[in-house]
Length: 154
Length: 200
Image 1 (cartoon, rainbow over the protein chains, first blue to last red):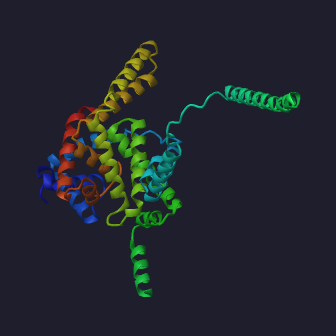
Image 2: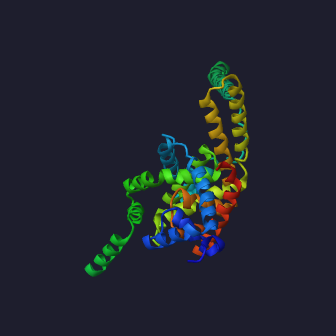
């Protein structure tokens, strides 16, 4: 067996032996090689140090609300945003129609002459009527007076 | 028609269990997603935690990884192992966050903790405290040694050592050849052996 510690391509055998991933035959061959190879023995010793050091590094426990936060994020994504509806054709058409209708309804009216105050108009009507009534009374009075004058002259 | 259906069913049965679950998620089965989460939550968080070395950030990134899996469910095709896909997403998220340097002050807080512990030790010289400090110092050295590895070497070591992945799967996660993975691991362990030799 060639020494795996001296060739990078074959070092995987050392790593696999160390991680106990070799098949039984390869494992046996490696054990025999190790008995007589100081370089591989040193590799194993130092790798054992690294492995033990890495073993001492535990990851913290998962937070109890990890799933809850994840499902909250999923729910937020699945709830359709208001603005996303703007880009749907039917919604866009309906919105455009609504805007057009609103524009027509609130369109400013053409300017009209200012109407005189209502009370003043009423007052002026009363005066006209009064004047007309007075004129009528005067005319009737003159008519009544005329025959009597005629009769007096006769 | 029946022949096609049976062929499809055979193909689905031949898939790994995670891929079958993911196909059910694709069809709208929320319970299958919950099962996938239950199976892979801890390994993904562990992996990302050791990549970024910050628990809160690791959980946020792991959530993002599962969220991306969920988002992509409609397009899912079982072309690779589910865990390969999941770890590839998680690794890219971890590497991006490290590159962003948003969480770069983590080591400082650890140093401050160590200083506090050292001052406490002066007042109380019980052996258990001393042992705890020694363990903490060793752990800190391991963490620094791993953090000092180049990105791909670090990811390869974490998947090889802690998740016990095969070279072929690590290669698919890292999107490189198996021989490249072996080379990455050889160089990474060589560096770690040099940096951690004094811990023997």
